Amino acid sequence: MSAPGEAFRVALDRSADDDGALLLPGRLAQAAVEVLPVDGAGLSLVLLAGRRVPLGASDPLAGAAERLQFALGDGPCTAAHRDGGPVLAPADQLVVRWPVFAVQLAAQTPFRSVLALPVGGPLAGSVVLDLYAHDPGAPGPDLVAAAGAVADVAGAELAAGLAAGSDAVLGVPAALRTDAVQARQRVWVAVGRLATEQGTTSGTALATLRALAFARDLDLETAAEQLLAGELPAG
Figure 1 (spheres, rainbow, N blue to C red):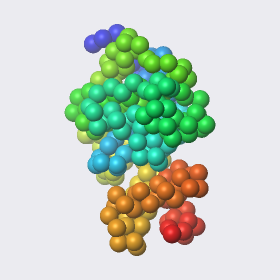
Figure 2: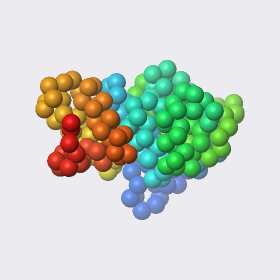
Figure 3: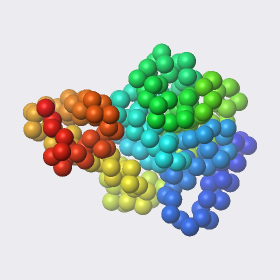
Figure 4: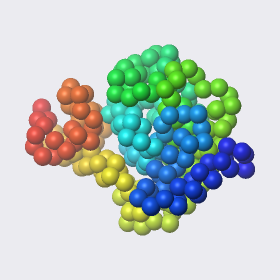
C-alpha cells in the first residue's frame, strides 16, 4: 500500500476510537482531509443518471458544496462519474466549465477549487470522492496521485460497509444512513409527487424542482420539504 493510503487507513482506524457518533462515510471524508492538503471532502453515490446520494462529508461546508452541485445538476463530481477519472477544477476552470456553480461555491463556502475522482474497487463506477481547497490553483501531480491512493482505500472500506448493511434506502443501509441521505430521499419523494401531478417524467419533475429552488435561492432539500408541506407552489 502507498504511503498516502497507509496514512489514510491509520487516520480512519484512529477515528473509530472516538465516541462512534460519526458514521463510516463521514469518517472517510474527515480522514481524507487529515492526510491530504485539502480543506474539505465528501463522498457521493450515483445510483442513476441525476440521482446522487450524499454519503458523508468532512464538515458542514463540504456538505453544502455537495448540495450545491446537486441542486445545479452539474459540477466536477458529475464529470468525474461520467468520465470515469479524476477531474481537476481550479478556480479558472470552474468559471469556464461551471460558471453558476463557481459563483455559488465562492458565495456559500470558502472553497475555490475542486478535485473529484472515482473511488477504487467495486464502487468505482458509482461513488466519487470530492476534495475541496481554499487555494484556487490546480492540484499538482503529487496531490492527484495521493488522492488516488486515498480514494482506492476509501472505496474498499465503503464497499465493505455497504455490503454488510441491510434495510437499504437509496442504496444505503441503515447503519450508514445519515441525515443527509434521509433529506435526499425526501427530494425524490417530492420529484415523484411533481411527476404525478404534472404528468411528466421524473427527469422533467427534477428539472422543475431545480428551477423552483434556484428562483428562491434554496437548496433542493429545503425546496422539497416546502413543496411536500404545501408551502412551495409548483407553478
